Length: 112
Image (cartoon, rainbow, N blue to C red; front, side, top):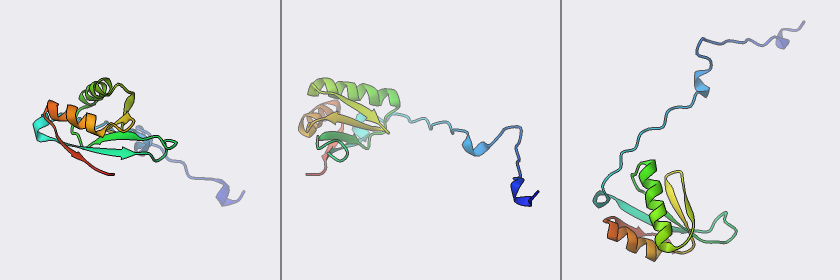
């Protein structure tokens, strides 16, 4: 039998450590006065429909979801949280900026 047909197999008691998921880092929420939220408008990959993205917030998952819920209610539209970014449907940057300022965040509106 040719030597190439026998592949070397090796394992340890713990198995392949490269494939084990790493625990996510715990993010501690900073107070609103210490944060600057950046608002972007994006249409790429959404069939031409605009969404407003709220980025650069250092919030825990629970706080991020509750802020997203508040923004969705104030804008009267849908949205979601993906990879630490709040996505709100439609062009809502001015409305969201107003709400965030009332909550104590500094706001930068980016894009055109």
